[in-house]
Amino acid sequence: MAERPTPETFQPFVGQTFKIGDGRYAFELANIEVGAEQSGWGFRPFTLIFQGPPGDVLPEGMYALAADGGAGFDLYLMPIHTPAPGRQDYQSVFA
Image (cartoon, rainbow, N blue to C red; front, side, top):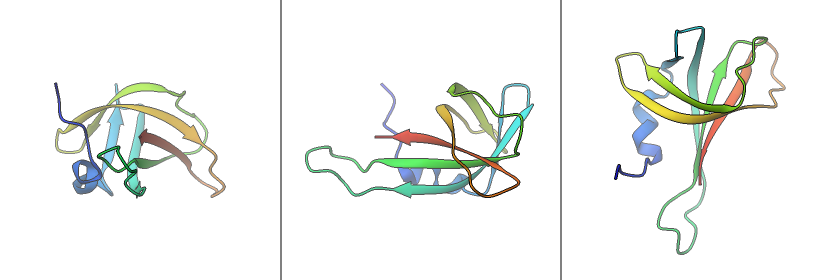
């Protein structure tokens, strides 16, 4: 069984672009929001926040993302409300 990802797993990729599939969609890993460790959980929940272009919104679902440099992750992405103009944000939650 693969190790459970942690915020530190993704920290080196903050600011990098991830492509999905044929490259039609490309998102920047903008931020990692880390919650407090929950008693008895043994890990800290966290959320990856990706930023992409507005408009052609990627539907919620499981996707294979490839970072510049070759690292890859299978993540469940969902578009989220994005009040900032000119972009669409997505999140991947680890709880």
